[in-house]
Length: 213
Image (cartoon, rainbow, N blue to C red; front, side):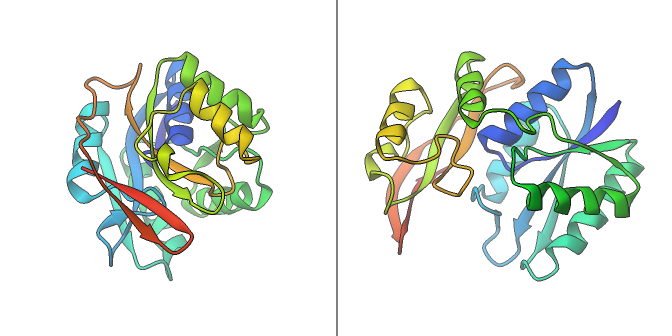
């Protein structure tokens, strides 16, 4: 089956993409929602240059949908229709167990005439993180809720040591509630690694991010 991947550049969408490829399905494009005001992808903050390099590193064409957030659902549906024009029969999402998120994605797919795929659905959150580590993916912690996690985690790769620190802080180790976000840098489905350079740490209220270029 040919599919479009709703790609955040983070660990969960990377694992979902990995699983669909491993199942013999073919990605025709990556779909990335871009904050038109900031010039970065929503939630994970990948800039335009980084997004171009993700497409090259994964060897998959990318469709970027620009929105200020107010018409997010409309832009997603328009982009899914574009993906259908490329041959996509379905769209894949990295949702795990939040029913509202899954329902939102299913509604967008139905409007575009596509099936919806959720390869991580109802799996243990810890199991997802451990599989990312065991498969050899390198996922760098880009942002954290600094009320819940120490800034020393910023710029570190997700591994069993960072998971232990997160558990000690009492958070969901998958970060499904926004405790942290990652950028995937390398792993089995990458044709070439992302050459990231870590910069300064920036604080925005309760959240802190590390500048990654």
